[in-house]
Length: 202
Image (cartoon, rainbow, N blue to C red; front, side):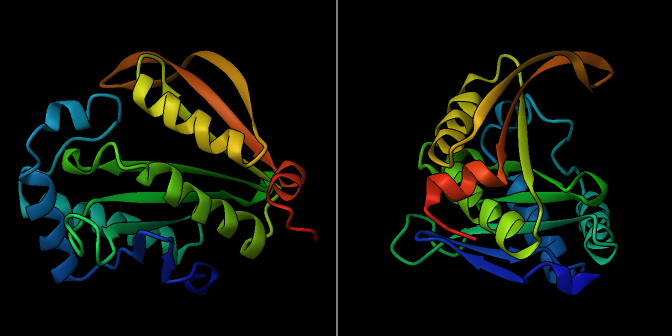
């Protein structure tokens, strides 16, 4: 199932490389995220914690490698291209999940604080939408953020609107973080909406 997902993707400013379960990736992940200057803010609205040891990064890398091998999801490392501040540095990770029975893709992103405010979230989302619709032949894309995470909500609104999608509403107690229920804002893009917005005829 691994070959379902391309090993690399590119945008104008980013290189997306599949996270592989190898030692070099484990230590790159650990060193990047353990040194983030503001982990409380970065992890405030996500059901994850920063790695405390290289073993935590090993668990993460092994988990995403298993998901890729089973065809459930692909996680990419995000690195700015040459000409960008921090070129070649691990800026974050993003995952595309595939629910084949629902013909639906969804995505998540974890971006280190020094790389906020550059529009990278929307840029990698465009690449994942292309992957979901053009390569994986899925018919629906959805993305959510926790109520209160206004920065993410604005970013999602921008790229969903650019691809013809819509806001589906606020869903109460739709998720839990640290054992506490949270509301989610949900957005979606259909294949038809995507084709119309991008001018990409079938």
